[in-house]
Length: 317
Image (cartoon, rainbow, N blue to C red; front, side, top):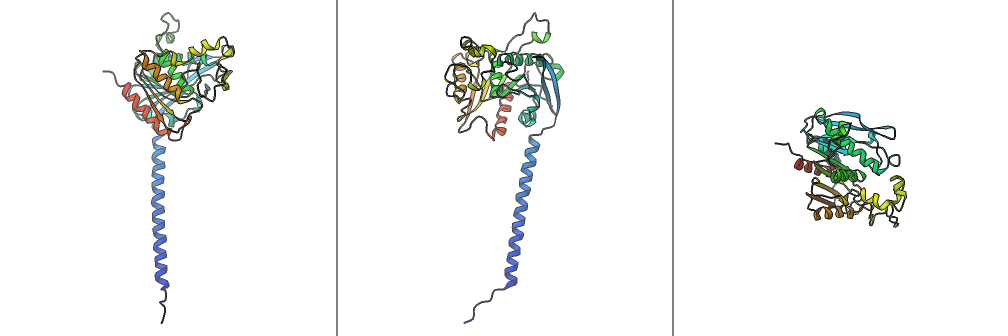
């Protein structure tokens, strides 16, 4: 009995077809990957005009500055973005991708920087961001925005500063010599990430030293008052948004990870509960299960902020 003899040309043809198909598939995958990468790059680099180094005040002998990023098609509303983490700030640390969802919806974005702690205390920084809002509102016509359609956003300490504006923002000093200081520091909508809301009770935070004092890594951030055990409780309450909730505060959106140990989820929950008790406007808390103090897909979650501002910063009739 004779055995069948393999046809070399047939095997070679199959091999060629296999490699051609593999090359085709690889080409398609690479083309799709390039298209996705190009689409993402396009989305996070919207067409806009950017002006840096606008001075809104001074602190410790240095200028306080913000940038103005105007989209290609402004909708007449402005969003102040707190460039702040650990109550430290550098104007150059602002990245355009953070504001991309807002710019694509037409919001003029104002990244506001402040002096970093401990050069400036947290309480001084709170005063300075109030000044920033007043300055931007005073020049609203120059920036092409409606002074009654200003939102604020930020994360962590930037979220804390945003909530200090939300709960304590209000009329300026009508008798002030500087017209900027006569303006209101109130904002009309807030969308933030994992904010510090209660410095008097740090709860389960890894920053809780258990001595009733400031966060363990920020002992120098609150000046001499923060170092005095007798003065700290009053200062901590003054700087805690949870103790200043009120019925006139703007609608607030909070995004927080359930596994955050630096600023635990309870900080946002306490704020929401306190706001509900006084009948404050909407405080919506969205929880990302298993996420810590920041997560990779947060860049896509920022679209929720744009949705919130669309809802609460609409054009006036």
